[in-house]
Length: 529
Ligand SMILES: NC(=O)c1ccc[n+]([C@@H]2O[C@H](COP(=O)([O-])OP(=O)(O)OC[C@H]3O[C@@H](n4cnc5c(N)ncnc54)[C@H](O)[C@@H]3O)[C@@H](O)[C@H]2O)c1
Ligand SMILES: Nc1ncnc2c1ncn2[C@@H]1O[C@H](COP(=O)(O)OP(=O)(O)OP(=O)(O)O)[C@@H](O)[C@H]1O
Image 1: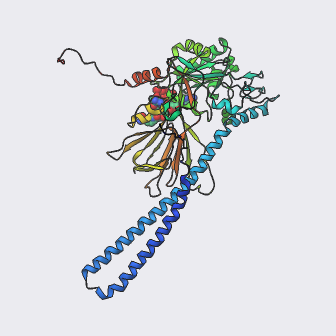
Image 2: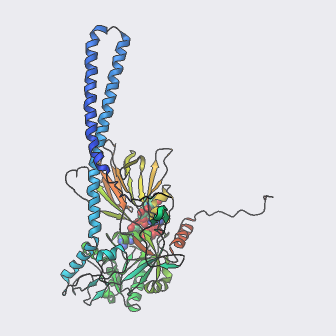
């Protein structure tokens, strides 16, 4: 009979280590004390003996050696004590970070409600955001399922300046394999009934989005300073309004461009203040991007929490995330608005800088979300970067080279690829750990699982500071002792597929990179007999 056992999932911080970590520094310090005492004893012994045997060369050599050993032992004990004290400090910061993230997660639905409340504040007759089926908002978020926002807007409000009741389109997602729809995405991926481990379901399946109510509000992001994009945006906005009866939102710059084209575009809605961008999610049903991959990154960066589905049109030279052809925008958008549509769920990373000087209070810098990668590099300095990397509580390695890329799988075809990382299907959850020009013959890129937290720290003895950038933007300096903490974000970006996720991914690496293109060997030659 097979034995019974239970599988436990532990969190990424390996709770339970904290006590041992905290107690270790004390042990190390007491080790240090006893070492210092023995070193003193050696010194005393040597002082007592030196006058009697000063002429004996061997004894002098021996005493020198003893001193050196004592010094080395003391140095190593001091190093150990410092490292352990530092580890305990980082553990404390981790715990704070983790509890903050958990709070954020818990509050996510509440934030949405808070946003609605904020909207309500400006509305004439306040209404609360309530999921249609009456279940709790948290339940709706966990299921990534149908949701709805009811809102009234004041006529003067820049966002949503028409005063009629607007209903955010609701949709549901279903997971299926090879066309078999399966409405209930099983959360228990591993089952271990009767002592047998089986993987009942896969975490990554083709996902299909079905509208339950029709999308009404569309937000368009466009690549700036491009004539072809500007021409298309004029045409598309008109078509969406006149043929589809949709409310259209654009960036303030684009609204100005449209109005310079014709005053008839005054129906187009926008925002004036960056703060209002945070109110976009509860209003917008669908995002359209006109540009290259950079415009998709730009659009995603506007959403610091959940992101509406994105329909990316290709108007750049490459286009790994932009499968739709702009010439056929009418047919594409007809199909998307009608649904169902296949989507690629692209994971994002949330990154957080912890400053060494913020030791006492929990001083926070804004959490950054990246769709491609976060890069830590040497900036303009000619010194090597020296980056200590930890995965949860385990030391990974010290990167000495030009820097390190922590990439999503979506970003695996971008900078990480150029630095020698693998190409990974965007729906595979994981964090790519790719060094940039490592000065080592044995460094190989890694792919870490999605539940881990990676910490990259500039050591105190580093010759120079390092620089962090987020999807190639927003550079920040990391001084000695500062650290970047990075983990998988709970808010992915869903992008509409032209065909389906895998087909689109393969097409992008074939068309974009000419991946593994080689002339086929002719049969005209020697053959196996
Ligand atoms: N050596 C390099 O390859 C290198 C250097 C710096 C930045 N980048 C990439 O550029 C990105 C920023 O893009 P941008 O358009 O704002 O800047 P950009 O205008 O400088 O374009 C960078 C190029 O990277 C491509 N790209 C972006 N995301 C991609 C993805 N997920 N898969 C494949 N290719 C992708 C773009 O199509 C573009 O050709 C960064 O996130 C980084 O990945 C690459
Ligand atoms: N709406 C926007 N507002 C401001 N900047 C934007 C916007 N959309 C895109 N960008 C920026 O413009 C730059 C170029 O955009 P994008 O990559 O989409 O076009 P592209 O460079 O022509 O495409 P490709 O790299 O495929 O040739 C990027 O750095 C991106 O961040």
